[in-house]
Length: 139
Image 1: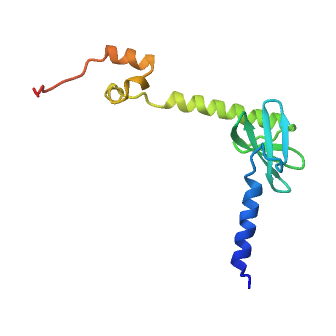
Image 2 (image 1 turned 135 degrees about the vertical axis):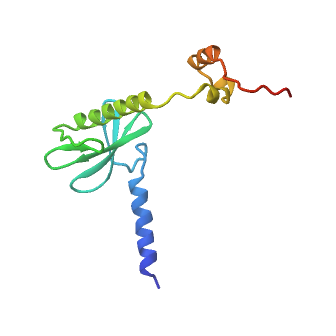
Image 3 (image 1 turned 90 degrees about the horizontal axis):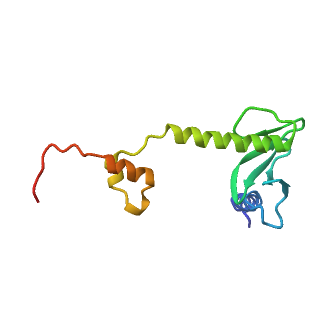
């Protein structure tokens, strides 16, 4: 006797296998545009595609009846390539913004890092650093 749960579990496992196919899988539905690969995931309208650049997934693109969209902005694109490039450009700007707003580690935090892990800028900061010592204790 087969229970509903086992049927649902089997269906879920089969559907996850189809959804998670890498772009190199011969069963994956792949579209290629210069510098990018799109792998069909699921959906009728919109159709969902994972977008790969080199070997990394950068996001998701949606194919609607009249336009394309991506998972990061609210724009409608007439062409597939514009939606993909819009996604890629958005992620580049987001990385730059995040990097610009991140706090630099303090000199004390730099002293806790391994020497080989320090960048040349961090070495320069440490050269100029004069610790504020209140009490010296002889060991």
